[in-house]
Amino acid sequence: MDREPEIQERAAQDYAGIRVTVTMETLGQAIDQGLSELFGWLGSRGITPAGPPFIRYLVIDMAADLLIELGVPVATPVAADDRIRADVLPSGRYAVLRHVGSYDGLIDANAALQAWAVAHGVEFDSTETAAGSVWGGRVEHYLTDPSQEPDPAKWITDLAYLTR
Image: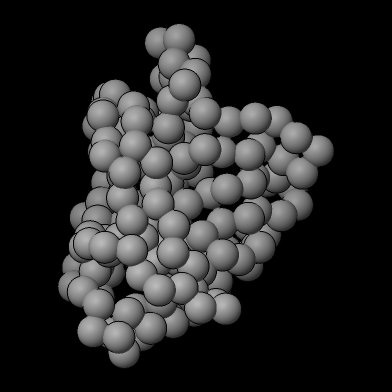
């Protein structure tokens, strides 16, 4: 069961990330491959994650492509290379919804957060373009490691959208 959305003030967060363009059909495979690669890269450099992994949605066109970054928070900025990027989740006020359950429910959870925002006069930091919706900060934080908790009904994901 999802909690009621709330507004949270969040500090900026450095992260290491891999930017990829996906479709809704290729998203799952990209997540699995990209996060595995990212955790391997961090481990090979002795960098300990400073939090759970996330997906940052940069540009969304649900009918076509999504430009995303698979990210892992780090305590200090990393030295990027041709594949791994160093970036920062921006500070600010975020509308946050905690989703408890399978990842299959995330589309509905995102829709619920967006409907809540409309009902409460909350405006997101996003702009419509020909390429799709460009987001200043739209993130899904995966708080539960499925390898540690095999029951999808207990998985916890925080959806966080930067507001204006």
